[in-house]
Amino acid sequence: MMTKTNKIIYWIATAWLALGMLSTGVVQLIQLKEEVLMMSHLGYPLYFLTILGVWKIAGVVAILIPKFPLIKEWAYAGFFFAMSGAIFSHIAVGDGAKDFFGPVLLIVLTVLSWYFRPIDRKVISIN
Image (tube, helix red, strand yellow):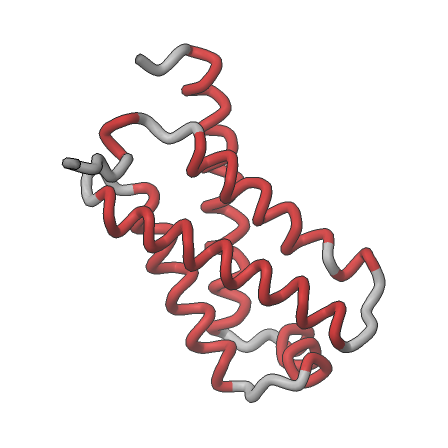
């Protein structure tokens, strides 16, 4: 059974995660000048912005809609991989801690949302 505190933690983390991923996904899709400069600085091709933007928005839909727990697992994993990749990319080019803040925050929100999600949003193993 999910306690009231766990439910509050889940929805706050999930709302902020969805907002963060949706906003960065849209910024990547419209290829805002700052995003284009950052992607170039990190050494990635610009078409990568479109790929990331589409998958972030799809992931937000996946974690917010009811049911489909396996798709939610994939979305959480994708968020984690994308944000950990962002952190390591910034480290690789010698960026400072301020450049890690957004991706670290989104990883923390991803883990909190995943950990505190309700039972009907979890994949149940039948072993």
